[in-house]
Amino acid sequence: MRFAAITLRVVVLLGVMGVFAGLMCADETETFIKEIIAGARTDSQRSIKLMEAVSLTEGNKKLQIALLEKSVEYGIKGLRTPDDCSRVQKAVRMLARNVPEKESYWLSQQAQIYRRMHTLAKSKDDKEKVGAQVVDLLIRAGHSAAVKGDWKASLSAYSEARSAAMLYKQAVKDNLSIRLRTIVNLSKAQEQVGKYIAALAKSPDDAELRSNLIKTLLVTLDDPVGAAKYVNTDVDQKYQAYVPLAVKDVSEVPFEGCKSLGDWYHKELSKNTVSSVKSNMLKRAKAYLQRALSLYDKSDISSAAMKHRISQIESELVKRRVADPLICVYCFAAGKIACPLCMIAGKSTGKLQCAKCKSTGRMKCASCNGIYGLKCKACGGKGIVYVIVKDYFGKRRMPRTCSACSGQRYIHYSVRSKHYRSGTCSNCSYHSPKGSDTCTACDGGGGSKDCPKCGGDETLRCTHCTSASGI
Image 1 (tube, rainbow, N blue to C red):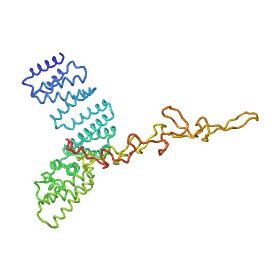
Image 2 (cartoon, one colour):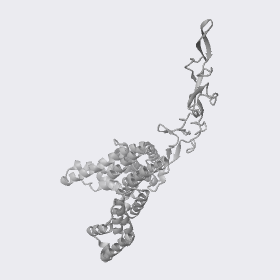
Image 3 (spheres, rainbow, N blue to C red):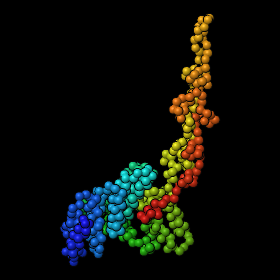
Image 4 (cartoon, one colour):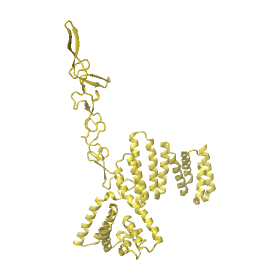
């Protein structure tokens, strides 16, 4: 009855708004939302009502998006059960399809939902899987923002990813620390550009300020299109000649232009810069030199020199690939990641690591709990004790078998009776070391058997590079 009443109110309201549905202003949308959630007592109920109303607004995409966004807003506040998580997750996915320009934000929202799912998870395995998903979603959010050049949003997402990776003990945490160093520099540069632009608006004739702005855009942020907007006759002649050329697609630049730009990026712009900036400048130089080589139809010293320089640039790029903010943070474009199953102290060994026996292949004897044989304290390990005996001739000191160890000189602990018994443990008498037994978890293999996950290779194929995010 309650749902029917809600549906009726929604249908009536939609009918009233009818022809104006596509032109609803912010105030009308807000009024509409308030009408839908009227009577709801919890955020979860509000979220459910808004989701139900979405199906009644077909044909009005803008209104549907507004309802979904509000449903997610309330839903995330009221995540109490797995069903709540599934419902809000569905709404976020719908928004991701309809508003792709906010992909980074929706991925971060999904990560929030998975954080709650981690709390609700019961088993250790489930918690580990959900924790890894949280980290992956935040990394994808950071990558999505980075692709668009929004370094501030990327920094926020990657910072959250590192914190989550540390909390959920994910191996990628160290790689994320490296990635963050790169993005911090880019975020600061982007902020500096904003200050330069504001200052230049007040002092348009300041040539030094203009040059600093162009250099930051062109080199640090690798944005020749943005830099070209501020090039005029007051700046360095190389900026005037090369920046407009760098704006063009590489395939449109003629031989001489490619050769000049390749030299400029390699010999000048890549010098005295941080590793991430140098990497971008070298990639530009390589692209121009490869284009120049393809246009050069001679086989002489010049072509050999270009090939040699391209080879040098490629070698330098391999060394600096960890600084590239757009490559996979899990494997840094290597295509492989360290196997987590056989990892010890941050390094994969390729061998099965048994947590029960610490990879020794041995465990405490199940019969004596490792207490194979202790020297009897009652007799000092002699097996006999002396007692004073009175007879016809007086007092005499006589030897007797020690009752504590039954004359066997040693005692051992019995797991079954939970008491000490005479003699040594018969179950592990022939084992080495004494008091041990073959580990039941790894059948004595310890660290000698190949890891079942990587087969002894120590690495696994990186599956994140082929994910939908494209990293």
